[in-house]
Amino acid sequence: WKEFSTSIKLGVIEDTSNRTRLAKLLRFISSHDDAKPTSLEAYVSRMKEKQTGIFFMAGASKAEAKNSPFVERLLRKGYEVLYMVEPIDEYCLQSLPEFEGKKMINVAKEGLNIDDSTQAKE
Image (cartoon, rainbow, N blue to C red; front, side, top):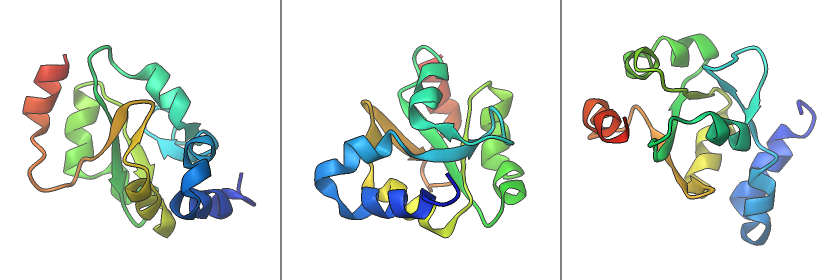
C-alpha cells in the first residue's frame, strides 16, 4: 500500500470514469484499528445500523486527528472515525463525496452538530 497509495488517491481525484473502482482500493487509518489501514468497504460494514455517513478527521498527524475534541465526542458515542493524515487524503475525499451511498462527513466542518446527527442515527 505504501508504494501505490498516492497514485491510487490521485486516480480517485483525476480519473472520474474509474473513481468508484479505485475507491475500493483506498486505505485510511481508523479509530477501529489505528495500526493497520482500513478500506472504506470495511468501514461501511462496521457502521452502526442507522449511521448514514462516513466520519473522517483531517490532521497533520494521527495523534493530532485522534485527539481532536470533534473525534473524541464521536468515539464516546461508539462511532468509528477515519484519520486523514496525508496531505492528499482530504483532497481525495472531496473528489469522492460518497461511497456505497454513504456520504463523507468531515467531523470538523462548521455547522456539523454531532449530537443531532448521532441522535437521528441511533
